[in-house]
Length: 223
Length: 316
Image 1 (cartoon, rainbow over the protein chains, first blue to last red):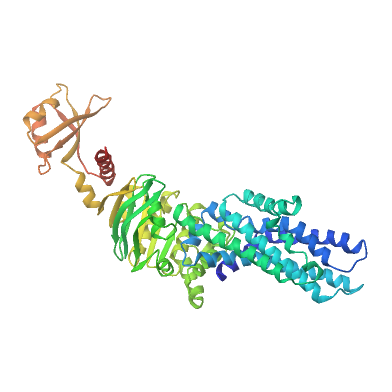
Image 2: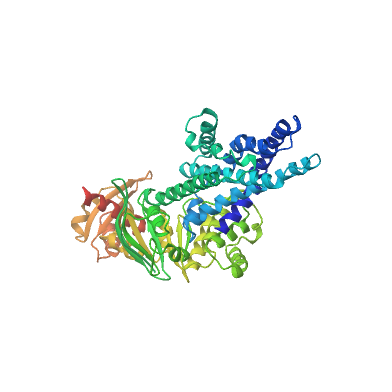
């Protein structure tokens, strides 16, 4: 798992994707920071993280996940990966955690806004950390879903579009709210870690990781 | 040692590989020959565990690829068709990544990576991005990826496709060198390649094995008689009657008429008789002047075509 993890993480920074993802996150985060905090003089960061999760992840998650398996399949490098002694599960987790690590990096950057607010009135640290933890769970669940999408097509663009659509439809149209990740990011922005939200998000992530494993295993026999 | 036992691969009702069995012993170089779409790549993908077999089993040095994939895959170095590589990595990063994937012990990894880069002649480009390399170098990088960690079995899918003649010779020499202490399976549709480097040839067509033998034996197998190509000047058209005078001749066929008035014939005679001496004696008496005479050696090419044709005949 770690071999794949290291290589994938490095690849994010060898290609522009890692920088673009972090850049986009910071732009979205800054704009929302202006709207939810600066312009109205609020120091609570709940709305900031909520709206970034709602809007920012739409861009960042597809960026991070669209290449994961589709590119490997298209260029044939999956043959190198899958004929190595590494297990499919290990490979999938390696890729998954590399993307999650990128989110962790962006979240560390987001702490600089906390520091900015400290100059005026320090927000409570623990609730803020709860928001960030929740954000990480939402992002992980979205990454797992994006990774699954990437495993079913060899076209990166299609992978990205399906991922975006799957994130947009439940959040913005009210359809399929069962799979709406934002439904499970309601209490975190208030600084509360709700067990049901944690479990739902984790279950969502685990489900899509399992789907990905099944798809990759199955491809061995139908291909 | 690789044992392939009654392996079948089905896609729906289509059989890409149909009940094939063969063995490859340690230190052998085996060539997989067949026309495009014969099932060569499918077979290699099954041996390397990239795809599952529908039926049958594949055992690599005692480890079943589907039951003990980790142990079995550890012994294989595979260069897939088309040589897929990670273009964003440098040569060294790529080989190192392959070593990590293949569970090469971290302590020896650096040294093994260096060794393989040295062996495949990549030292001068080791810090270049793979995307900027020429085709020949890319092929070597693929080979380096397959070789790193000293796997006992090397499987190469069309290793010389797309290379220039000099590079082809280099890669072939490298493969021969590898054959000294590895088991090598390679696929190719270039027959001369197989007869040059392989000790054993497996000919496969439409998913079925139609012959397993040494290149020499295969060549011998298809020769039904001796063939002689002869160019003559024959103003009286006496060549047609030659058959009556020389009972050993099975067949005389006009191959082509050359502009200067000479004709080229292909003469086949019985297997155990050499009619060249007789020809030199008899033809002048018939007012035929010999311009050229040569014995035709059967090639693997002919063996191949003949075997495949026979195979077709058998099906119909």
